[in-house]
Image (tube, rainbow, N blue to C red; front, side):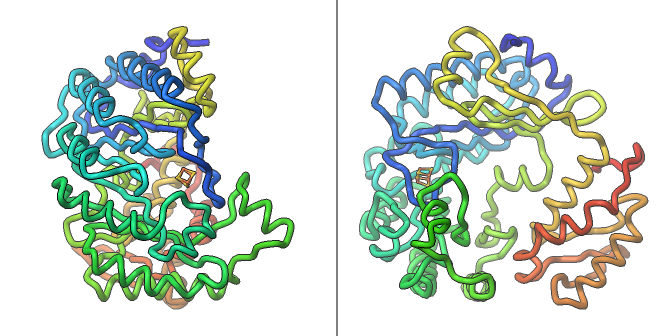
Length: 408
Ligand code: SF4
């Protein structure tokens, strides 16, 4: 195994702009649909050991961080709002000390669950330097929340939103899940209305999906639960897009809606192919290296993560070195998920074939073509967003393995 300091040598010599993701793999319980790397927390001791390891990983990444200007920090999970605000302050302090630059305007997001925050903890998080809260509301209907196995009710979600505003959060994002099982399939219209009335700067709207391993995956396999059919799911997705756009939100990524000027900086970094460092169990990183980029995956099991870091061993379990062509294909795949759209001229020798395919997409109502500075740009429609992954597969082979094909 490689020691922590040794891994840093592979991270390239000139990182520049960087986003940092910190994973908190603990929750109060496990929601029915959840296949994320998280597990119910055993107690405070377990959390303390994990936070100690996270601090040690930050320390071991000093060489990389000392060359980086942090544009965003993101505490994701799991339920990061289970971490005491004083510990969040301490982790942010370590990043501030280690980074070449951590400007005051950098976006610092923390994912929170409504039942695990109150006015006092939210005020403490604001003082700690968190300036964006991403609240897992999912629905404003108690029955729907129970069907998802969520640990909170609608009233606690509304209380958390009011408390977040009082605590000084001017950048608030709400997560909603739509296309639920009957009898909650149509409740999304009410959920959107209630969310819009609360005026968050940002909304992430996800179609409920069956991902294993989860309670929902087992139940659907056994035939005891069923999600709406694909056609109904498409209708719901397109309706969500129309309602939120009419309410002044920009549909700027498949699942993401923002008031003008409030796109998620950290997530945009992923979609724009910018470098990020992932810290914690199951976190991954995307970093420049001489001649290309490398994607690194930390070990997923929190106990093994703590054990490795405790012995000064790297928590990185595997790494994938991306060839320039694969990097460019991935860039195309991510671009298809964004409203900024695809400019075929950015794709070198694949430009002409790509434009031909995208024109067919225009005819099918998947893209809208515009001309900007003499170059064609294809922006996905709501239907195009919905089919983004399939479209990406169809376009994947248009970019040949050639050294001249590389991401800009
Ligand atoms: S709160 Fe989120 S991460 Fe935790 S169990 Fe529920 S869905 Fe999974």
